[in-house]
Length: 131
Image: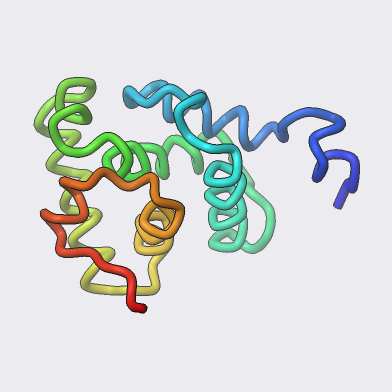
């Protein structure tokens, strides 16, 4: 691990740039997502793929719709992406809830823990943090 990159001296990692691009493609401007959330999401992607992203652009593009749905909420996500993409994101979220330990579940939990999840998503999917 490059210690200078950890402290942002060398700038953002390529993976974070890929995630920003992927989020923008699904209607969520990267600047509206805290860097800590993006870094944690990239780390979850790496963990799921064995500590190295083989195709960072593809991995980030696959994660972005779920992250964006959780952060934007159904209405804004649908406005940016349409009904079929929203339905796919909701299907992924339901499966994540049912199967608990998947990458999608961890990404959704990240938005909940970070406080970036949309209140309507919390309500619609009955999310809560245990005390």
